[in-house]
Image (cartoon, rainbow, N blue to C red; front, side, top):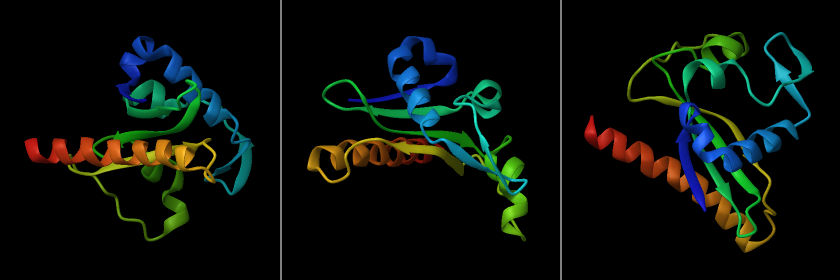
Length: 137
């Protein structure tokens, strides 16, 4: 099952949100824009301050399979704030029609058809959501 919700709605989807945060924490060390690795908290300032959209896929057993976070580029993004120095010259992309996808996390068994299907559903949900948004704009 795929769930789509914002940070403000996370309490209504507490099970999916908590499983996504736990899966994000399993990543261990993350790259820092300062060229070092660090243990990154599961929830960051982009979650707490900018009300992102989440797409979370849980498998048939109710466990995390895949998830991602989407931020509008009209505000702070990871590319603009954390990674711009890594991609010089990096264009400053800011548009109501362009969103940043970050914190993509897959825990499903990618060798099984069911595992691949749950991960694909997450990406398809993102595409369908953004197509619907673009059609309204």
